[in-house]
Image (cartoon, rainbow, N blue to C red):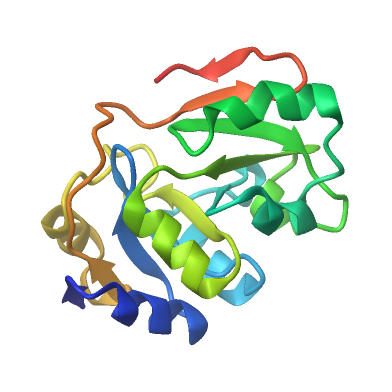
Length: 185
């Protein structure tokens, strides 16, 4: 369902649904990370291997803390100046986080998004969202609600039809411990 009303998407996530929404550069697919049925549904829709892991976006660091090991002051000093923003960090993940979310990794990809719709959804939900590009694996990510609808149609519970952020490429991914750029922007 294409909508300009983010409250429709909010209700869909609260009901265990999968949504699409604009991010800094591309449309993302998302759901409540605590709902592993919905997480699996995203992996199935994308035809994505679970061992790759997914990204969590949040409106603030406290929403990510249940998923991450405690961050020391040095690590916080490295990551916090980049947020909210278009940098995704690989940070040490709690071992109890499902492999459907973290993949086969000891880190989790996380970002405090600068996109106003992403931030508002996370604030209103009170928890982070899964955020993975809205596309079939190995296909270009959707850059409009119409492209999302063309690829996934009625398989999604809501598609928020709103503008993307100002980034030309998906967010940069950096390793939190080493600072290494894993995926350039």
